[in-house]
Length: 239
Image (cartoon, rainbow, N blue to C red):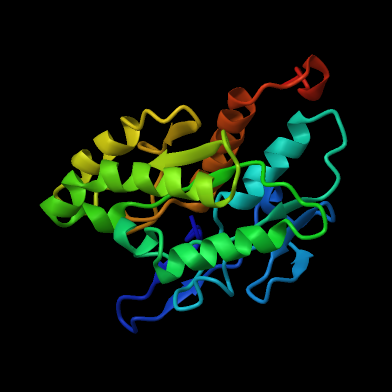
């Protein structure tokens, strides 16, 4: 979810770099803000997670393309749309359970976003590669993921909050299919799953390419728009 589009690793030097290419669907827009690590709002621009997932090299992710697609689909004025980056790459689902550092940081940032009259409209979730390496993690993934979603909705006091999650695109460990089956089998009424399998991957076969990140953002937007009740006038039918 942090976004590695355009990020490459030089095997000779071990240096990881981002190519800096920002596609049109991910360019800044005065109507799109992001909550920085210090809990202040600023204009959103790639990489969205530069001060959140700071131990890794970040590139293009699905977040900006998601919001651009939402804004294009909506005829009514949304006003400002705020993104609240929380992702940390390479983490297991157990590191996101209620009471952990990452869970507390996520809920704290979400609550900070509400100050001044904000409203949480959806949660985007893309995680799981690290849970494909060990059988126990993979077999317990569904229970842990559903528990996380239930706790998050309760702690944000947002019954029915749409959660749009992504089923894994890459095959990292021997238990990838177990984790994917868990993701595709989530049955919570407020959760929708977008399957990223088949989207192009960067060299190394782990992270989505920049065009794939853009496509995923649009898929997430469609999933959200299709999951919530909306007046007829909200959606531009010329898509």
